Image (cartoon, rainbow, N blue to C red):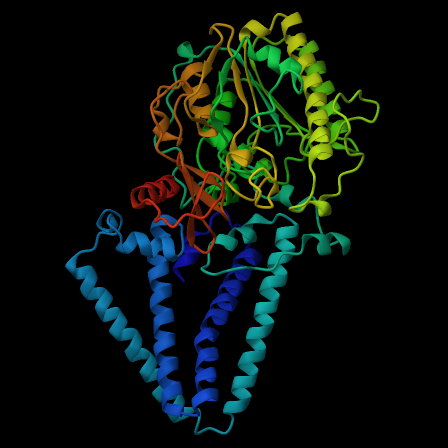
Length: 586
């Protein structure tokens, strides 16, 4: 099968054998679909000729669709779907799919050949098997064998998923209509998870048959580099409208010295895509592909090349999502987990680690720091913390969230968790100033995504459910001592972070288009739309509407309040989106 050509980073014989078995099992299941419908036709009509005709027709169509899918997948890494058919037969079809007369002739001959082969196979089966009394045994043996293979393939994938064994799990997006079994909690209970397995996989970037990132070699002039420290502070699940004097007083005061971007949006509504889009500057539709080959962001590559001292401190583990396999894969001595029994305790521990680091920092080379606070995501703060917002929930019951749930006390708890994080960040800024490092440190403060409390009245809570402003808008500050405080209202994205750092502070001369979907944060040129989401689900975000694109390839269009619109998606934007999500593939 042609799909096998798009598998990367498989250096194990067992993994190769397993992937081949999985491929056989999956396509055996797909080929059972025509058989099922044929039997249904026979059950209703009792007509053998009609049954055979239906089976020949459906089996032939399935083979033709699979062949067409391999062609589409090789170009776009996207399987056949309503969206692809819309592109194929839409206004810009000729810009995407360009076929010669020879291609049409070949396609016609292929279709005729497939139907002819199916008819021939039926003739041969009729002649040599149905006349043989052992046919029932053959069918039974084949069926049992295929069932066993399917079972092994799904159990094997579930084990690989639980153990983050990416040599196998990368097949999840490889085969069409492939929905393998996952059972992480079960494997943990059965003590079948080997935490060291993923660590033992290839931990350095490998040559890829499929990835072309960056498009052009990164060129930088060290003399043009600012040699400034870079610190990125991310508060998980921080709402865009919760940067206020009462909720986050320290950050609010720091805002007065910073560049504030009031219309900033994440590249996703979840941590996976939010952090990915921040460091790579490209859509998280590339997440699995980059993870499979341990592809590092060019921004991290530049920090390493320019001998920055890199300090990554995350309250939540960097193993899930597996940022240790993509974003931070080249970072030496990467700390995978932070000690602590609660998000607030872990947040305090990374705070202590960071302040100790700065207190003892006496190196001549600059540092790059990344701090990821998790308390707001967990609605958590220390028990002895003087929480200013009352009344607040003592314990959060996630199962209670429904259309009738009153979120006031939940929101107060959320605000208290933000207030706690703000106190830590206030001390971090104070220390940098005290140590005379603030003037030479670029500081970004933002979130990985937003947070919703059923604001749209559609039953959505927290994040990951839709692409409304509540789930993708985030606060965003950039502090640069040499820039006068200013407020910007133009649309900015997480995609813009890497280009801004690369071009403004690391001396990179490449166009952002060589490695990113973004531009400088200070570029105020208009954006008509952008891509937001991750592998399983993403959307085209326009100023007044959202086009959701699901795993199945189905689309729907909603307004900013998530009301379904009786409107067609913008063909031009779909076309540009498909170009962007295949841009960094060979």
